[in-house]
Image (cartoon, rainbow, N blue to C red):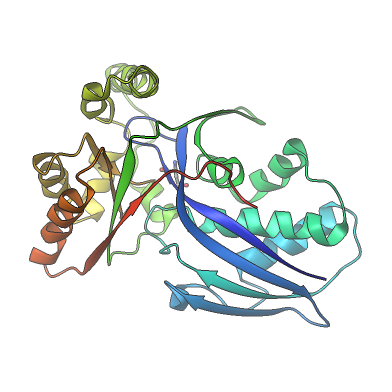
Length: 295
Ligand code: HSE
């Protein structure tokens, strides 16, 4: 059996919506799978040096094998060729693409239909915060709520807004980016984020884009994670000066995300220059929002 799984990257949090909001992006990892006599992994493209080729530690393969067992299907080794485009360790959900692809591959090999419930059951074993996994799975703008299980709502992203994603050569494992966060927050800080998360979704749905700048201010993660990213606040300032509607940390970082209408090149170059002036290589992508999720 041979098949391909194409999974979009994602940017999560979107400022204040920590562990709640995520958007699928038109940047894809492709997994070419073939049933075989043994487990084998080949990786080409972006960040391939950061992806394990060892079947016992490669995330895609671990998820595939665990899902095959969960489905009660007999062990079926596969060869996978990963054509990677999503930078690793930069807050674009690269691990989520591997988790989504691993689960979907196991369903395909087993011949079983994928249901949202069975997908989520397995996905939560590998990732407790679903704000990257769900957008990669279903596409669009997703609002997630977890409480033992995941409830989510998929909304259409406005056609006239794009993302600029600036990726500096700074790799931050998510565990490290979560370890810098406090154990608890003041009521004032929690209220600050609740107000802005609600405003973000409302501003998008009503076309009140001038509110998107206030809506991405946050007191839960960006102030702490900024310490891991030299030039973070300057990058935010320069993004706004260049005309972005919103500028924020993408997921757990290190990428900077910006929402723009039509000045993506200007915003991308302005943010990239901040990193380059500090001797850190950076590149940027101008991306639309993926509507379909993994296929
Ligand atoms: N919401 C998560 C975080 C995304 O910011 O830590 C990374 O999984």
